[in-house]
Length: 563
Image (cartoon, rainbow, N blue to C red; front, side, top):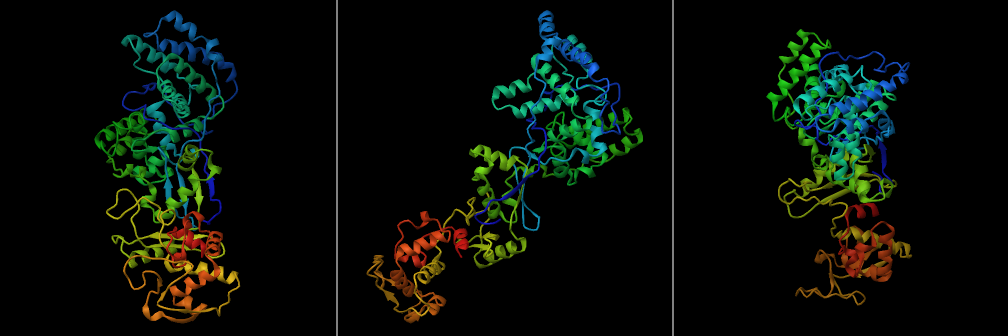
């Protein structure tokens, strides 16, 4: 990443919204199945537009009156039919606001390799609908909405069947939701900002069902079937923190979406009805039973032959046990954890990503950004090995190394002899040490005094007698420690006393030379030089004569940037 410049971030886009788990464990609608096969269509699922508008009246009637029948056991028939009339239906909003799907952002190194993935509440990577294999689309249609390719957003037969069952049961047992309606429901859930709005979006009221149907019919008139199906598969929740079929394929099977096998696709399709009940990580037997139901249904509808279904059912359920691990802080498992945290902090403070902290956090963790940085993985590995070798991570003393490319400000590496994160052993920290934690820079600060002196006109031949202990009248001190130099500044080694010119004094890092040079230049000039080189003034408040020998703690990143 380039120091003091804007990060290059690229949104990956995407459609749809989030699933909040309301479809789990029987709370969701029981979707229409049985009779009439679905089936892919070689034209991307787009039905012919001709004649569609002439059928709107029929769709309106079935969407309104059909849904009214669905709720007959609960509401007075006279009032219900009035409310569900075609006029009322057409008066409802038809344009559904579909903000981009929340999806993870990625931080990339200079060579394009992945440094970390930043996630919000939903771990999702949106995939192109065209990349979703036929077997996955057929599996979800078979088990969730077998008439998907023939209905207009509302399944008339499903509504009638569900209404009959509800009438017999005396309450709402089935909701007859199509895949299009399920997609609409989850968009409404994503758009909800209050508890009441979420309850309304997930509720079973007649008004909600009619509005859902209105949106569904409108979507069917503007999108192809496969576009709707792609959006649904990107929005659906597949358990263990996996939102979207692409994320589920990667985390459960470690395969890309295009490489899903028939048994894998059937298992994922079976999950959406109840991700917790059919969880393949914690309930593999239930997951297998559900998967086989999907396979049998695919065979029944003619998507696969019974023999192919039998072969697939003989395949054991094999998933990655750590499928839920992706929900943790990705910086903790990054090859450059402190750099990752630094990048994240920079983004969260960038007003270009939002005017409020909440807006910026949503953009960073759910905006699908691609964040390209200047980190060099080989340099990073070498820096980390060096600090660990010099001072072990278990040592109370901290070692930090930041590598910045001269002339560009590009950060090439950022290493600390610490284990980043909340679940590590002793001496760990969640603080981004090179960026906000501060350390005394020691003799590295002398170079700033040197720059101030050269700028003030002092030449390389400037000489001082530099004793082992120097008592400064301008920057008097008294450490009250009882040492032989408690009221003066001492060299690191007693034998360093002597007459020095600037080059040798710098090479040997002679403290008493630099205190005298600072006296000549003046402390304000040294502070000003430090500020201009990138060391914030806030870290140098109340500085005294020992500033030049590194008494004031500053962030290592700022010192590296100053150099």
